[in-house]
Image (cartoon, rainbow, N blue to C red; front, top):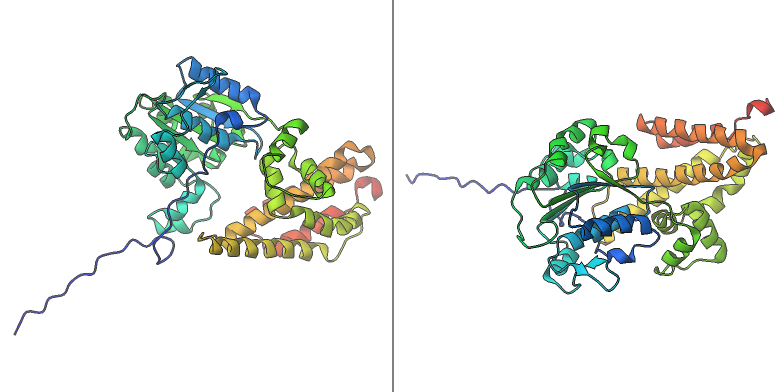
Length: 386
């Protein structure tokens, strides 16, 4: 009788779904560094470092969210990695926009530009890491995309200012163990390596991390710079909507854009009568449920939009983003009241209620309960009214 043989099927690597996984998301197409609006001090530091031919190996770009830190990091990397970079008519160093290096960077395929983001966890080989909450940047992601490749030879091997650039976005999400793991890399990277930590909260980075890095602050934009930025976009709003977005953004183009895209102005309009009841220390019975419903509706729509463009968006992450939008909306409303003496005590009490809501969310209390507790806290009488 013929010997029966069995052929093993090849093992398939299945990342988040059974279909072929999409490419790992990296970064948007960079803009020229000179096009960064409202950050003359930061751009001056970066330009002077290149002109001196002594670019430090480790940097921290810090400042409020949405002020251009990550955009500037990518733009600067595109200069550092390009051998065609040279002074322009203004003395600022810029690359040839038609160079091969710029083509690779624009396509997101340059082998020596490494961007580390928490979303890369969704593409890790380890299922536990893929399915974990994105509350931090996993150490495994940093090992795969920074600690290991930093020791490898440059793939392009050109006469550029830097041979490799690593950008860690939202670096405040690195836990203490991971920060300690990159200390040696930050202290003594291979020659030609530049590492940029982008953060909106540099105080969450270890002092030993901060001491090894040159720091560049990205400050909130003034009104003229914000207006200049808006002219570069295709955003169309009513004057009232625009003014609300401008006051809410607090000098952050990213915050302006996020609030516009999420239609937070409509949330503010919808909820304002209920917030007004809170100001009178009247508990609005529907406020908690209405806030939770707005978050849930937005989260579902965000996930659905992702499906249409081929992104596998998590409902959990969507809820987190939507909740952050809601809490930012409420916090901004009450921060504006701090300048009015008659409203100061109630505004401080409201901000405390928002802090409690964030703590409850961190302990996995259901969103509806958190919003109900928040509504009660917003309407609680101040000591002066008892």
